[in-house]
Image 1 (tube, helix red, strand yellow):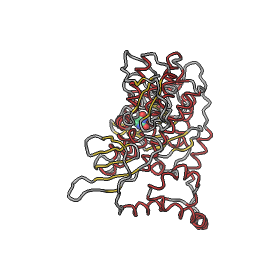
Image 2 (tube, helix red, strand yellow):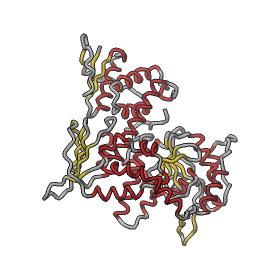
Image 3 (cartoon, helix red, strand yellow):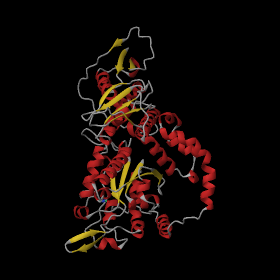
Image 4 (cartoon, rainbow, N blue to C red):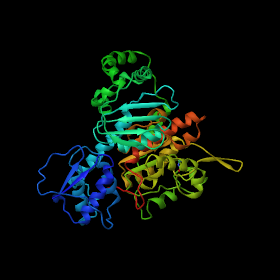
Length: 487
Ligand code: URA
């Protein structure tokens, strides 16, 4: 029996190294005892050889497995390393195992991966810093105490570094502490809860939290699923929740008695048009791209150079939808290569999202514009044009069957959800799309370019990056080699 200990900090790298060594030495899963730091179950180690395995030779595994392992290693299940190694072992004989959705071992690991991603997201949403700046220092310092379900602080270190680059901060959890002082994030063992002073800005935050609460839309189960009770004790706003819930029926009645606000007629018309345009595209032999290029379903094709088809893996888990090709995309015949596209690619990369691993397309396939001198000025497609082009978008969705669709901007949101409600109020949220798939809403990258000043641009950029980070798990950056696809 071999015994392998995996440290809590740097767990994914350490597990990978050990697993490579074991695999190279031909050690079957049943002969390995994996010890997760801090979680040893005091097994009977009689006859056990403590291994410091040196990996030998190159072992090739699917990228999708690497991505899976990189997340599952942060799960709190003490069996996580053993489960991963058992799957890795089986992969040698069954290289297509990663695409077998019915496999129970893989399904369990996928479940764990999902739990880790959820926990990572909750940490981003619920870490609350308090200021601890010492007098006489010129850089502000903050600290937060957080109790995640899984060991996700390490996964989130880069996110917090990029988001709060202009201040010193530390996030303390029972198992790991992350410390940032302007250079790189340092990870240290966990600590007891630090002493955090009362924060004057909390009252302001509470007022804001109360003001955005809509009593008429209260669903306690959805609220507690979004903000699980176990996080409440460290959330200042949680103190206001019981009163808000108790007072909701009376406030909702008062709202109902007040004058109604009717949705704009335009929105109802757009929804009806979109609902009526379900794609009935079937392959007549030429294939989807050829049919899109030959499209004359609406007049937009008359003035564009060409239709711009989507690009990326056809089995990508993440589909990203923009508005329509711009001037440069129209000339190049590829989506997102102009200024907004380059900004998107850069920010997505910073958030850990690899555009190459996602399927990238637009709600409308032809460039709508008006000539002004020698320039072609972008025109937003109207609801009718979006509805016509939905024929193609639906066909792309049906072919790719993504786990998540990221809608960038109002036009994509309209095409995918049927709702024209303001995107700035919906961004960061996942809604159920018309195609029955989850749609994560975000800003369009050109919106960032249009911001009137530096502060507004920085805020919009932060929001955009955070939304990209939400989707990044489905199209993670890879370290060379082919990108992860659906497994
Ligand atoms: N904006 C979009 O929405 N799509 C592109 O392809 C380029 C810019």
